[in-house]
Structure formats: structure tokens, C-alpha cells
Length: 389
Image 1 (cartoon, rainbow, N blue to C red):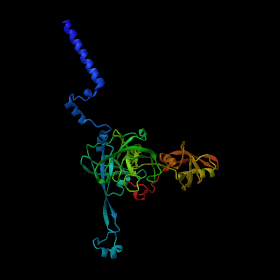
Image 2: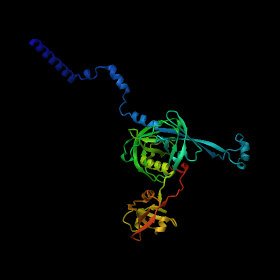
Image 3: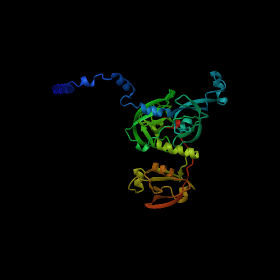
Image 4: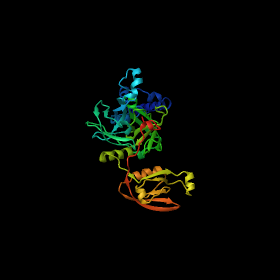
């Protein structure tokens, strides 16, 4: 018995030694051995390939909808003789233009299970009828809850059950270089997913909206993508796709999205009040250039030059004058005119605040009552320097 045990132990030792030598010099014979091949093949077929974002797309796509709008436009080239060019030549100027139906498309994002949808204002602007098509094929008529042209956002509502609201991400956690996935309906071809990275943050002064704080991305955004979702690698919403910078009308790798933080605030205000209520003090401001700062004997360009004061407006009643340099609003130091606009907009109408201005080298504190920001002139998409898809 003792001899048998010795033989067994020696055999095991020899086998382990052979396996060690094979693993040392011919590792491929072990690692590529087709052990349990039937089980492995099944598992491999279900697993996502490396660097795939299929789970993010699968999570977010049911929340993105296609939006089709119809509106009547006056066509100056139409007449009561549409098929007779000779008669049109003589009579076209003598008869009123006939209205025609114009169809347009865009995208939207389901944000609440109650049927609320976020999209762009320019997608539904002037529409007489709005149809929403879900990824499961359902179609619903949408009603406009409210719009905010100054951020180019709108909220719609549909009456359907079993909706898939998107999961919010965090704008504060977005960084340049992060993966960005755009979902929408470009050119009406159907729901499409494109991928890129976050190229820049805080883009403004583009001439698109009054209030701008865009996420820039190179994920392909084309006409029809407006109002669609920009999501992160986990499928969470980080922005609403809005515009592209393009000379051809197609995507050239520079797209702009409204951060989800802005979109949520606007949506909440519209749902609660039917509009976004912002503060206003009745001034026209401009940035301080180095030349202007030098002419005012200022050490820097920090602040906003009050180029105009509305008569009987809050600032006028408080004693502000054209030529004052606004340096502080309600305790917030003002860097430039854009900073002033954003800061004033956050103020609640009818509240009393103080502002500080520089006048003839002296700092003056003024007390004023904030008013409600009136609706100003907003550019139409045709007037934009950057195309709105």
C-alpha cells in the first residue's frame, strides 16, 4: 500500500511538472484549448464587444421621439393659376398668395412619465399641428405646455401610458473629452445614434439664443436632430441638441447642446407657471474693451458698461446713468455683459436688491426693485449665423 501511494505521488508530481513546462514554453496549447466550447460560444455571442455603447443606446433610445409639425405658410409664388405659367406671369401680382401647408421634423425627449416632452422652440414654432411618434410605433397628438424662445426650449405633452422617461445625468460632471452620444431623427430617416466626444463647455456669444451656455460636441447632429438627446456613456441625458456650425447645412463636427441643468430649470418653470420668469433691471450693457477701460482709467476690463438706461425702468429709478460701469449685482461680482445678463435673469421680480457702479472713479451703491423681464425680439432660425437642425 505504501508503494502504491508512492507511485501515485510520483505520477502526480511528474504530471504537474509537465503541465508547468508546457505552460512556460507553449502557453498557447492551454489558453486556446477548446474546453467547454459550446458554453463559451453562447456566452460570447451575448456579451457586448469591447468599447460598445449598446447598453447606453438601448437605455436612452425609447425616451427619444420623432416630432412632425404642420403649419400654413403664405407662398408668394402660388396663385389661382398654379399650372399655367403664362397666366401666372400676368396675374400673380394681382391675386393674394394662397396658403400652403409646410411640413417639418425634429426630435424630442420624454422627461416625465406623465407625458411631458422637451424639445426646441424652433422645432414647434408656429406649428398648427404637432404629431409625436414613439420608438414603439405609437403616434400621439402633442399640445404645447409652454415655450422659452430665449433658451430655444419648449415643453410638449402627450396623453399616452407606459412611457419611458429618460434618466437625467449631471451637467456639472460633464468634462471635455467625455463620450457623447446624440440620438434623434436626422433628415427624417428614422431614429439614429451617433457618437463623439464633448469638445468644449460653456460656449456662448454664438448669436443663437439670448441665454447661451452650450455643450459643444463632434457627435454628428444634422437637420431633424434638434430637440433630441445628448447622452453620456451610461445613457443619461446631459443635453438637448440644438444647433450646428456649418457652411454646408450638414454636420461638420461642431454641434451645440443645451445643458440638462438649464433644460430642467426651464421645464420646471414652464410646467409650474406656463413660462419662464426672469429678472430685469432695464439696462443695455456692453463689454469693456481694453480701449474703453483705458479711457475710463480702469485697471481691468472687469464689469459691464451701461450703454443705455430705459426711462422709468428699475435702474433708471434707482439713479443709474449711461456710462456707469456695473461691477456688482446683489453681491455678485460682474465680469462682463454676458455675466450681468445671466445674473440679473436669476433674480426674482419685485425683490429689492443693491447694485454697485463705478462713476467718475467712485463706487456708488444703488437700491432698486427688480422687474419681470419682458419678451424681447428673438431671431428666427433663418436669421441665425449657425444653422438650427
